[in-house]
Length: 324
Image (cartoon, rainbow, N blue to C red; front, side, top):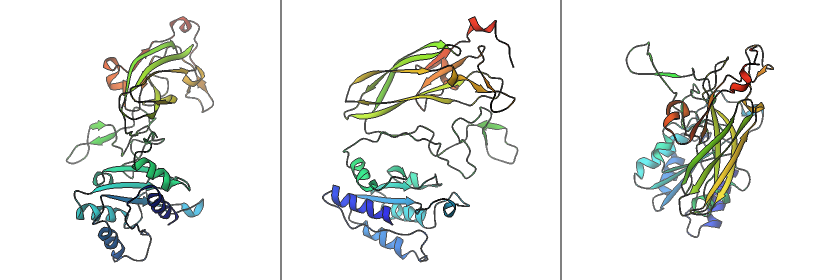
């Protein structure tokens, strides 16, 4: 495919010692697995195997699908490669315009890159990441599903939207968050970032302002997306589990620290009322948490988490508030 050629050309141009590369079309009528065998055999003398999976080019109606699973043969290729080479490094790259179910392939790979629709320079961009010319800094803009029911998505699902778990016959009365492949905002880097000194001022009526200290504690300069969420304590309509309110992307050199400031306006803190989707409400009696980071859960860890700050109700505005 065109994407496969881009990847091959990118590695041939960016890396001095690259073995032969080949593509395999998962929709091919060649179902006797000779192409899988050929791919597995070609990897016997290499240090790193790059396996690109995903979708063919499509647009509008011809791109409709009935199943979220990957095209035939792609999962089998990854499984066969890992079975044949249990100690070899495998990089899995996904290209496509939507999340397809990856099944067990992430567990079989040493690393996964979600390229989505990477554009005409995908090959060179991938080479730059793999060879360490740049550090990955992207954050998932979606919740990547684990199962075909889409459980756990979107990230701003209501607090009552949970899955059941347990063994034995139904009904299961143990409720738990739905497992996902990767949560909203997930992303890795070649360096590490540490957060501290979160401060929050204001309330739901005046709006929120705050700051947090971010330090690159690793040895490589990189960008970091600082994500600010809110967690409503209660509401007249069922609240979301959390809601992204602000994002600030910053560059930090090794061991550099930076104070990142953020603001959340009162308009941003309004919610849709029970009457219709044009009925926005600003309720001064509401209290909520402000949390920093995609994996910070202020509902479960709020009082004991250094990256969670509680915002009390706007007491001075409650006397004049008329619920509607």
